[in-house]
Image (cartoon, rainbow, N blue to C red; front, side, top):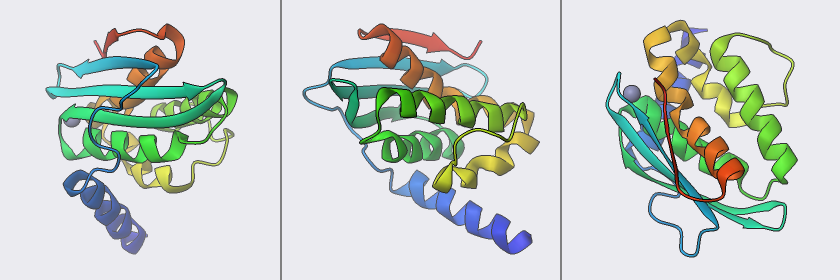
Length: 148
Ligand code: ZN
């Protein structure tokens, strides 16, 4: 199990040091900002929808390793998904973080963040980008969400 933890740690650090899909998305069809005052994490999610399909997702911001890695992994995970699939993934990820259920859709690579749920103070770091994604998908215009 500790080997698995080490591997998860490595993936998180890799995404923190070399975030994927980092930067503004132009053109974007929606964006939303998230702020986690507990840790100081700030993230802005850019989303481009092609009808009901996620054509692209990127992010900008400053934050800790967990919030950055989570945003990076998320932008990779949602690309190409149908809106309903992205929403299911979002719900499953939040359920994993809050320990409210194991029977969502398969999370694949996002499982690397599963260890975070053992550290309640970091859960908001991990879910920040996801709350912003939800705001972007629902709002369609610039929205700001906060974990508080
Ligand atoms: Zn944080």
